[in-house]
Image (cartoon, rainbow, N blue to C red):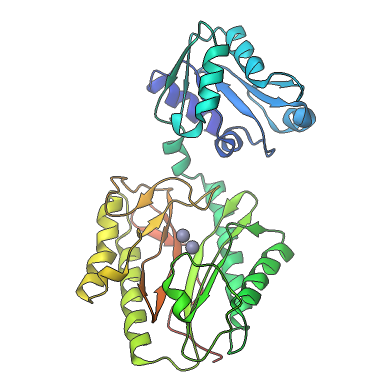
Length: 357
Ligand code: ZN
Ligand code: ZN
């Protein structure tokens, strides 16, 4: 069933008579349109794709199953949208309040004059979490490229190389292979590696540093996200101890990932193990997040997540331990939930590497 059909069924099930899709990623997911501006007015039996004149030709080529209407960029966009809603006979237009600015809601409500305008929970979010086999193949390809990227940049790791130059090489690698960065890579070393979302700096790698590289590709509209931590030179006992505990937690979480478990329960698998090792206080973020068209694609695995894992969902599993003044470790893989467990999509080795090795 197409994404459009799935969404129409969802609208009917939730008794939503008309829904304004204005999140561009959801618009792309729904229609196949790859431009940067467009909205859909969707009803259980019909709908219009609305974009501006920059995309008239592209929209006709890419969008099927919906009437395509375009307006001139110099004209009144919200007026055009409300005019279309009226022509479609919409009486109540629902929208996802988390995807609209206050100004847009306020202005559109005025233009809709006579049409009821209501905020609802996004009916598309849950659907987008369950990836089709085609989407999973695209994520798999992005993961393969992320593995290859790490294989490539690992060769650069040695004392005297800056975090920034590794960061740059990650970007070159993805661009050379027809991909984009799924997000700004994280390359942090030594004490900087205790910053989970630190940025690459001019700092040079030194013997005895942990180096964490967190990077992902965006390929054909889908993202990957992988993290590995290495040691420059010889690993100390402390390096090994922290690394092995994070690795143990990561593997245990992957083993436990299966349909029916909640995000909170899966997070606890890793968090409890790190707690037993005396490292819980150093694990300050959630275990993982949904992955897809966006690197944070909806859904989270953390101590408050009620999300129930289901086949077709794609998650990152990324426990870490970050010790101020010493350094940090994070190990992150991407998995797709299957009927009985999960399939790991990233393959770069996970045993502690001392580099150059
Ligand atoms: Zn990551
Ligand atoms: Zn991640």
